[in-house]
Image 1 (tube, helix red, strand yellow):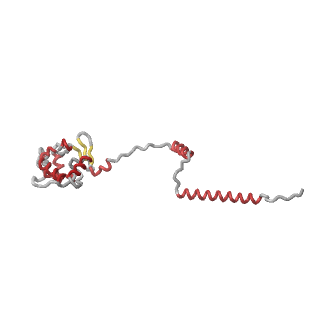
Image 2 (tube, helix red, strand yellow):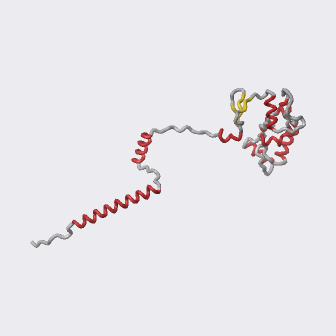
Length: 208
């Protein structure tokens, strides 16, 4: 399956029942008509296969929230071997994933430093791992914004205006412009009326 479909089984060293896991995956696709990764249901197995090939979904969704689906096929007890001293948890007691992480850290196999905020780990090689709840912040990409010289910006705007480019006018500016134009036309009309009153329309008739 790995060579033909590119199926990748995570943590293969800790799989306790490989045949059962492969059989379960086959039933999920062939009988349930469900995608292995996104769990989307299709009308038949062929449609599922086409979907998984086109979106590269021939893989398991192996997040913390999805581990329960494959829990019966894995055995992580090997990771607890070599823990120095007695465990603070009873062997017959069900432990949480957080308690499992504490056991792994105490075993010396995972040398990490947990930051005070509790949302990031610093590995031995210096790399930092952030919590997935903060992934939305880690994925942000801020483009650098160059500072523009005000004089240069003003000169460019003047060139645009000379070519007939107009900026967006607000409602207040539009009202002020109309008021100014109305005032200008009124003054011109008054000047014209006064000029007409001074002109003589009739000349004296002179008999020759």
